[in-house]
Image (cartoon, rainbow, N blue to C red; front, side, top):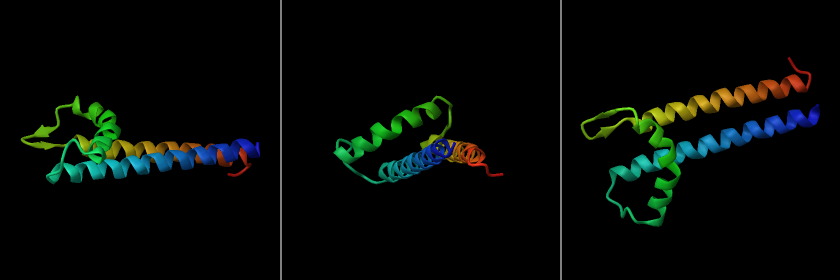
Length: 101
């Protein structure tokens, strides 16, 4: 049972790491959208390729007011809750396997 608990802890750390990276990439994309940059730059293209799948879910909901797009805010909230819920569930199950509370 100890091995399963350690695998679940590692999975929780992985989920936390991935959501943190996505959080920072979304933040970078927001900053890039405010400053004049070459949209064909490899860094900008990378940001778009990584964050477009997440943002496309929220862009289906009409969240624009004028030129302001609120879909990144929903993406941040979504990533936060995914991180908190999944990490909490995985760590709770891991501690149960270890014989914890």
